[in-house]
Amino acid sequence: MRAKKWIALLLAGVTLAVLAATASGRPAETNALNRTSEEVTITFWNGFTGPDRPALEALVNKFNAANRGKIKIDMSIMPWDVFFQKLLPSWASGKGPHLVGFDAAQMPQYADKGVLAPLDDLYSKGLQKSKLVASSVNAGRWNGKYYSVPMNFTTLLLYWNKSMFKAAGVKGPPKTWAQWQQAAVKLTIDKNKDGKPEQYGYAIADHATIPMWPILLWGNGGDVVSADGKRPMLGSAASIAAVDQWAKLVIDKKISPVGLAGADADNLFLSKKAAMEVVGPWMTTGFKKAGIDFGLAMVPKGPKRQVTLGTSVHYAVGARTNSETKTAIYKWITFWNSKPSQISWALGSGFPPTRTDIPASAFEKNPYVADFARFAGQSQFYLRNVKNFSQVNGNVFESSIQRILNKKGSTRDVLTKASKQLEPLLK
Image (tube, rainbow, N blue to C red):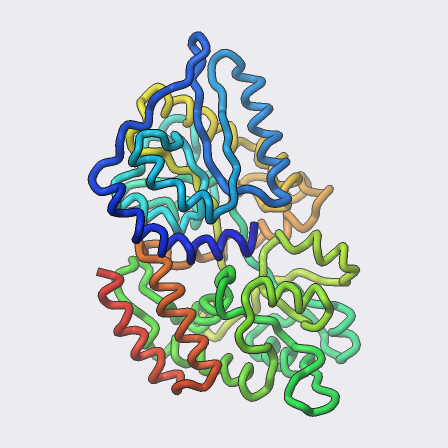
């Protein structure tokens, strides 16, 4: 789900602009129920087409079996780009789903259009907010109300190739930025001195990726926008200093290729051509199958903070879903976020649980789950309060990083200009 989800985020920005006209005003009625006797049918759309699909399907089947004759989840799984192309038109025509699962970063765009139902009362009807990862819960809040709630959650961690570290005489994993940067330089090997290393110290993507660069800004006390989503921060001294420091390592020391998409960065680590990458749990299986002796560690501590990215798929409900169907949906979401369900989900998908009260011992069959869950409290969500996510991320931030890495302007000039570009997008 990793690359598909974030590529879909970029595609969705274009799609939403085209489709907004067809969904102007309040959406059409979406609460028609397919009934068998007194059974309530919940139509549920999501994009879990990857290896985590069987774990999701197993829990849906378990819930349906336990609620036979009362509630039935009718789930449709489709690629993320198809999902976003269909969603607004389906709601506008009155044939859309009652329940959706999409990246939490998408929620503000839809909530702002009035197509989502507020879910504040869910937290008073069985779902214990205090037991869930706080950063994920907060990602569901827009203009003072909750419009989405956690479906899954994960952090990103530093993957490091133990064999490469040993061969280079580097004691890993790095714990501070200074150690991280020194290791990245030492692990970059260009045997024939042609400017194209045979081995890179750190594979960092600059587009079509789970956000990697924002973590570096956060570690230095900077950001792309303020926490409330209202002010640009790319032009701040902390942001400029962080980008400049790491960009120089990429440009001058060649620690990473320029122009990597997320899948490219994954493949470099997978093919043993990069010694480090910051990415999520979805890559553990592939790296293991490739025979890589890797370790996992928290993202090294920056000058100001030690922080990593938190990312989450959330549940959201169509605005015109009636109260009976909404009650049934609440029962499903509460079941999904229960301890037994989250243990099952985590072991089946490799994602850490949405809950913080499950001990690591519950994940002995997949110890990587506990690794990613351990640092939930040090996670931050990217562009949490920004409805124009795709424009801010793709059109401004990622394009600015690419300009800097391709030496089309100084870091200060590029980010100062980008900060100005962000102002109308944040209003």
